Length: 331
Image 1: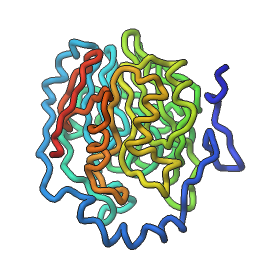
Image 2: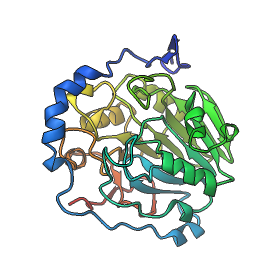
Image 3: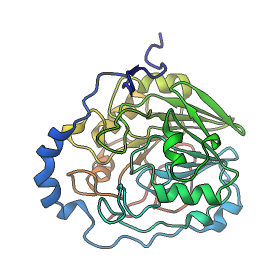
Image 4: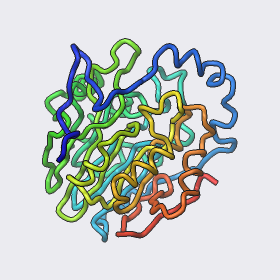
């Protein structure tokens, strides 16, 4: 009996995770502080990456397979699925940070200007953290993608409006709520994470993963999440998925409840029955943890029998049933 996929619960002003979760706080900062600020030599590439470029002319032709993805690094992607273009967690900002002068800086430049992207049908925001929602990116998209619809979890439209997006352009979804965009059904689903753009407003907006179901293809965007027991149910109810996007980077045992890391991604993908192909996300663009920068993808590539789909940044790449993509651009 399906039991874990329910609407989000709240305690006072704060949303709750689907299962009990430790998110860390000041104590975690004190534990990792010295290593984070002094031990970062291997956490960033030792040589410049790229340049990577996206040929905008590619978007003039529909994907032959009906499913094409351009991965821009970290969790940002352009998904073309059954005739609908979905821009996911677009982050073109120089830093994943509340300031422009400090904080985690991009490893490589954006592969295409936001203004050069094709017309977007849907801009999908998973939560309000700085590595998924950048103010400058939102301002530019609000100005140049005037016909795009926006979907975000509960409470996030107010954050978007602070960067120039009119709130009525954004449809907020609770977990298990759906919205149709053209032929695509978009359903917000639980993830095991948290929200907040400071230490003082955590949990006050919702976070989510998403099932994107078209007439011919299905994609699961796991966004940010620790492991939990809902992945099998998600696959059962909304799959089988052609492509499953799961985070692998910015993980550490101290915050395992909210970031699954490569080992957790492998286990979660298998809990879903290993549907289709696994696309590793949430890696390769920012220094957000203590591991060396390519450790997550190195680990994923070593796992035997895993059906991987990992393209070159910025390269529009077709997703064909059962056909792996294993680019080793980071080497």
